[in-house]
Length: 444
Ligand SMILES: Nc1nc2[nH]cnc2c(=O)[nH]1
Image (tube, rainbow, N blue to C red; front, side, top):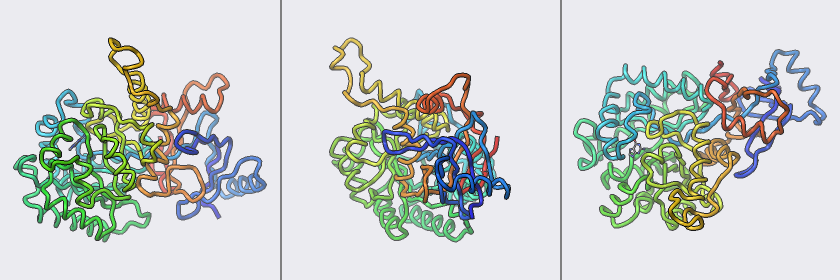
């Protein structure tokens, strides 16, 4: 017997390029939080299930201007950077890290401060329709436990990483793991504490998190590769984010950072690498071979990326791609804003931006993506990257869902028009309810 039935019209990604509208459907959620049936009005059981849910007060009937969508999956976000979202984005990456980001992250040695920030941050993600987030924490085990606990308390599906950064040449004295051994011990301690904490809904997963190649010694990278294999855990890092970062790996290792990460066992089918704007064709093939996903962070990439990720080409090659807000390289926690930017950046990549060149030589042909593809990245693509049964309104997926109110529905619109309106105009105020594992975790 279902414990919740949601009646209304819905949209879900059918594949990388198409959206499936589900008009006036019933989404039936079982007691364990899985979608067990999706019924359309023409289905035999529809009237019986509807009447039954009504009778047992298990029905949520959406208003005419409300739509059901899968919860969004943020594949790359730095939780401790929430207090500086929207600051200092004119600085180059290395400068932004040293002057703004490292001093802020160092403050998370204070658990009270961590508690304040993480409570607000988790609430804010849910309020923007994000139901799963893959997050960097800091180097502090206790503060990362505060973040893990906050995810469980508020009902966010959280992938939480104990950050490793032990290279004295690229990290400041006041914010660094003292040695590779210390860093690995802290990571293992965090893994064991998360895994020992009660978590009936399996909401929190620890993540192996080398910050990026420059901030880690060889010993730390090698040890993290071993820990990921020992505990069979997801991995997150940055890859080829900027010209500077790419060149750094070439200077230190004589190879690209994707190859470095692979050499240390850090490119696996459970790994998610952020940005990738400077990946070469060979790097992309390596990621595809390893089934390592890329977290596309289109807003952040404008500031730090020195280029646009060719999403269309990556999907056509069979690479796994999802979407990330990259708070605070990106200024907003809204994946809706990132969906829009993903489409806009892809169009600029196609057309090029220097109008002094002949039109045919300005851009990279056939790079544009549609809102349907950007929505795929933020839902089903993210779920695939995490090997998670979620991100779609379909039988066998977790009931991670959001109810969104569409704006200005004064004229009859096709399903395609309604979908596009939702992608381009949804703001946090329009998100009326959010479910994770079938539990209502946010209501507006
Ligand atoms: N965007 C971004 N890139 C990084 N590279 C290393 N650390 C960071 C970070 O915090 N944000």
